[in-house]
Length: 138
Image 1 (cartoon, rainbow, N blue to C red):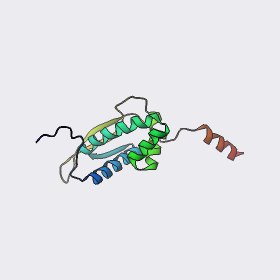
Image 2 (cartoon, rainbow, N blue to C red):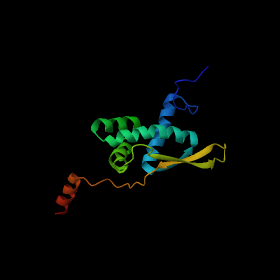
Image 3 (cartoon, rainbow, N blue to C red):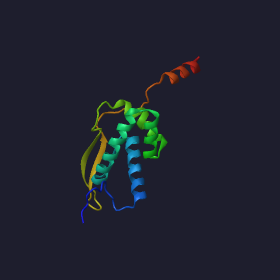
Image 4 (cartoon, helix red, strand yellow):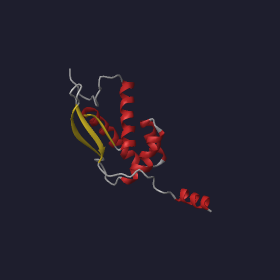
């Protein structure tokens, strides 16, 4: 048997469990900008997150809804589209994987995945929100 045209890793899980695992890891990466996981998981997350960041950089309504549907987490999707994506100026290669030794229990290879660019977590000030704060101050 051959394994042609099969993309992605299975992680010894069924489809729904695998999808939940990758979504959870992607949401954690968005919230904390850096996570430690196994090397295989980090490589799989990088594949999906690079595409998701490219979608989020476009920023229109359709692409925002695509990000929400892929992450299944409104808060993480909002952070990605409104805070992280505008700060990224590169066209690709948004994430970095660094090997971090081996796990003590089962000796699986660990890695740290993080954004290449330094990101600040403050949302950019919109004109509408700036006007509201000025009115509230008066």
